[in-house]
Image (cartoon, rainbow, N blue to C red; front, side, top):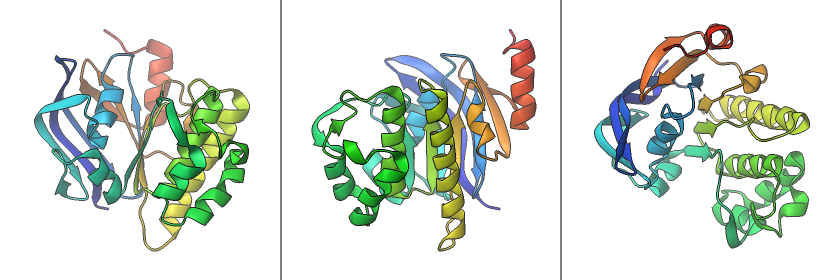
Length: 238
């Protein structure tokens, strides 16, 4: 199976500080990879780099998506190519209603709006995005937007954080559905890179590879369940 995403010796600065110090990582077509690591290890910065956010500055290395070098490509072009991201703490977007955003960005706006009830978001269509939303509602809103976008590479930054158990179950099942539905239609091979601290999302999605980041580099690679067991027993080590 070919590479959907390939990170080669990536060096990144944020806020004038070096954060990523030579990251190498690969996600295959149709596969999910899990990213572990302590706070401050560079996990969220890595996802922001893949998405192309302006808050980061790539100083070395390459980001390849489906074989194409996207290192210097703007975020909107990456989104059009099929990369989508669920942020850990997305901002409030005042003046923009969730329903209007879905109508503006979805290939099939009617279907996107109809999907809202699956995410228990139908009553939020006339609400400003994330304004007054709970943690679980924000996560469901982000997933609904991703479903409308239909990306081929999902970047999920701690999808289970800040939500209750009921919302974790709903979010986990919807992530599973997005991945599985994408693999079964029109020959698409949906892949994902998922940051998790608790491992709860792994109860819902099958993951082939696990990476542990530490101090801005990939420290370990292995089976994600084995890595999670090690982390639970021994932490991230010195």
